[in-house]
Image (cartoon, rainbow, N blue to C red; front, top):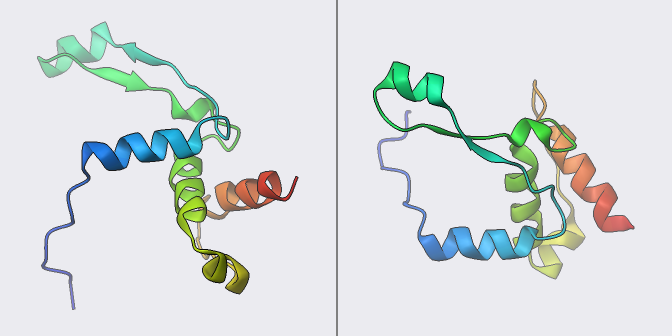
Length: 100
């Protein structure tokens, strides 16, 4: 059955907390204005170049933020990921960097 409830909103405090938790764990990536896309869209568009992360995507931020939020008990039980795409790569990278 499809989900009908709206996704919870993310508060600014959540974003700020995630940024602090991730500081030093992921690369700072540029946030640049795109004149061409802004002109095409008829509004100001800025692009965040998360493709410059080690894993090549933004998924590393979400994966690591989730892993960092786990309790000691949850971490002890482990994490399993399944994905036909690249979602497992950021988690492997996070696990490896946390083990160092």
